[in-house]
Image 1 (tube, rainbow, N blue to C red):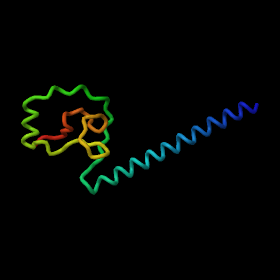
Image 2 (image 1 turned 60 degrees about the vertical axis):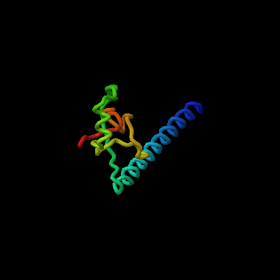
Image 3 (image 1 turned 90 degrees about the vertical axis):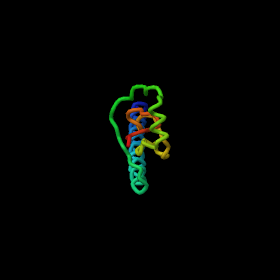
Image 4 (image 1 turned 180 degrees about the vertical axis):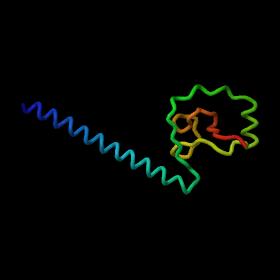
Amino acid sequence: MNSEREARARVARVAREQEREGERASERAREREQEGFGFNKYLVKANAGPPPPPPPVSQSLTAVLDGRLAPLRYVDDDCALTEAYPYNPNGSPHGIAALW
């Protein structure tokens, strides 16, 4: 009987810890979201699956980068350009989000 009670207590303790961790993660996400608004950094959430592999780099991509024709780029939490999901939902090369 004690072992069953101890097992239930352990399960309840683990559930409480997971709930607290979820609350802390939500709070960290809210803090990151609020930090970015003063610095032109916006949190973009995408609920799509992982992106397909990007096409090979071509001369047109070089022209876009050299001509500075990509005014919007995807960045991660550290404001570094990223091609990784979920920060870059479509896997675009060099984090390009829009073309000028």
